[in-house]
Length: 496
Image (cartoon, rainbow, N blue to C red; front, top):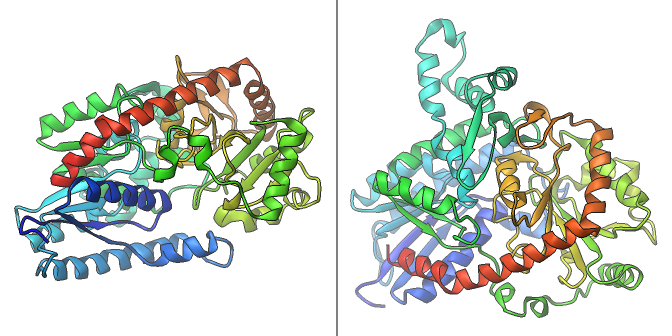
């Protein structure tokens, strides 16, 4: 090991997209810098996630999330104290990468342990377009401090409770007030929208997110730099915007490009996908292609956590629509942690019948692109599942939580959309008029059903063909970026 060995220590949170995409970044950094070593630490619950796909046998409640975060923070502080001593081949870390959803809880202690010269870098596993909403547009800690200091406004609440409520209300106003004042937010690279439009509540009220975001905002003020899985072909406006903001703050910015497995980056990307070996999956997919042709299968995934539990009627309507379309849209689905919720519905049990147009097939159904026509994901950032945009597969986006509507707006905007955004699946405080689309978004099941039918018709028609062509163009641009500007950012990050 060289005497110039550079050691980067990383704390990740136990969320699939945050973790897997960073692992791909770490692999590239190690290739780019032979003098680099990387230590990554996270909670071992992710192993259970991988083994069980977060099915009903693994409880994962808000209380469990709190426990996992607490144990992650404690484990990190213990680990970084040991790493600070250094050992042969593994010197004291000069740089630390911290996930934006947990780094704010440990950045001060980490800096104190490693010393003032250690660099603290934020890993933001989403699109740049959503960074302002998460990191700079609000300061929930300052809002909480101001209200807590005023006995009349405090109303007997703790500071943490005030912080949580400030996050739920975002600007400190109710949804009705935000609508009547016509408050419009500017997004770097995405269409303008009302402030309440950019936060989704399909997963229910984000009661626990306030303290996490407050910590993220604190971290953003003191970080030495940001890592984001984006590039200029994906966000031609967002990247220059954030670079200028970082320049003004004296911070670095590393847009390292979209992240997914090396096999997905082959120029002939369709050949990089192995055909499924699971007999149930294979039979369903082959039958769909033989009956309805290539590019005919719809793959539905809400990821590991973002299931729309607040709108079960919308899920039932989606199933009903897919089962009743005059021209079938054969669909393979993965309900992840909340499949047990779907099982309670008689509609879901229909999907297990032989010959059904729709099957619940799990992760194994991530079939090769030649079979797949569209993907319905939850839009957790641009990162989504990198194996979707990288092979040039068009999207039908169902935003379910957090800032996902911002990412959906980015991907579905003209003049070159790669996605269709579902609007009538909105819930809670997001319901109301849309600045972009005009008519009121009701969230009613009948309106969602109508939109599902119209969306699938568009996907099969000229609109769908145009979006599919745009998706292929984007896939090619992403490959060029990976070889060029993103590779340069990886090299720069590996040395920072």
